[in-house]
Image 1: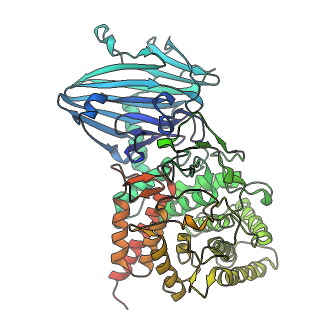
Image 2: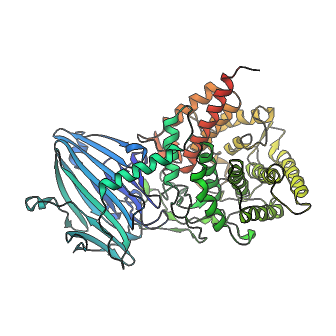
Length: 617
């Protein structure tokens, strides 16, 4: 059985990220980028597929003799794990310093009290746990000390360890079969630093990192970044954590924002709903930016706008719904049969076949994000407005074609109501850019867009609202509801107190609520073309918090918000879904959708609280 998803913490350098389990094992790490091959893939297989363990010995854990706690240090992506045993206590500080040549993982062990025995195991496997590297010892060209080197093809990983007295050489890693292992006896006052460095195999290793300086620099950078966050409402701690997660998922060089740093963590244990989220979806990234802008982080979000202009440059007909983190277009989906999958959930997939889907809602989210940049005083460039104008013109030619929708349905294309609402939002935002923001368009274009906006509204009311059931529906050929309908008032299509929307909310609560949390839709309808089921999708419940806030149902909004935040793990991380039956997080982790939903719900609640506290004029 794999370590539970929620048992993992996150470290990263804003180019990639690693998941560190409570037991001290780094079970997932792709190098050098989010969308590169994993060198530690135990999360989706077994320890032999790659991991780096520094933690209490298994016998002590199994006997219940270890108490483990952890925290994020100084609001940074620095994870401190403390193990208390009958013989003493020890901490392990994990981080991936940013701004360094190469990609590094630092693990600092510090003895706090007594003496603690830790298991140290280093198993490197390139190619998502499939390629066994050539392992050898070498001399560090910078220090002359011995290092452990793993090489396979273009990849090289170097492990530097602490200087140990001759009498303590037993603590050095020794090869046993296809793994390297040691037992570390750590006494009070000991400090042992280990540094993993990835670099191309044809390059010489960079100089060792100054660990103390790296810790200080990363903490200062996070502090300075968070200082611009102006949110002061309820749940501020959860909001700050979510903002840090969204920052961690933003590639510092390209500005691309990944949906999650993982692939194939299942929506249902043992099921096939296992997808690769290590890419930049236009929708998800735009919604992430909207969340960051809502808490004052506009200057920190502009790299995404620059990424967008580069990624979608060219013929508007070639627009994709997702790209790699540097804006490349090729991300073919394939399966990795050598990996057993998380708790046997197969197939394990890399790449994402949804890249070729039509998803008509995407442009609406993108244009809303760009509009918010304008409204915050960040001016359009000539090329950025030209790009938006051409994309709207392309949408004007294709918007009535059925699509795969927000949820990337792999069944038949449909007229999804959410897609039609976001088409309306795209045209509405384009009109507003001209009328309210003064963006230039040729003669007749404004009137054309205004006409399209009204046609889109009419289509939503014609195809998306069902008089028989007195509610909006998932698509035009069903009476089923979909949680995505909750965004209708959030984008201004309809007021939250409109009777037609109110009955829709009631149906969503009745049909999609499971133990107080919302499903995306009923999989039993067969709309998605996939076997199996899934669990409540967390952003949907955050949308419901926002809707409750708009409807003035503040007690219900706060109760649901507290419930959702209570699903976070011990360091505040949320996955894509949650299983109330198993009391476990499910799906890719940590998930940008869940954390941006938390931020947006908190902002809506804070605004609603202020309105409720303001006496009528």
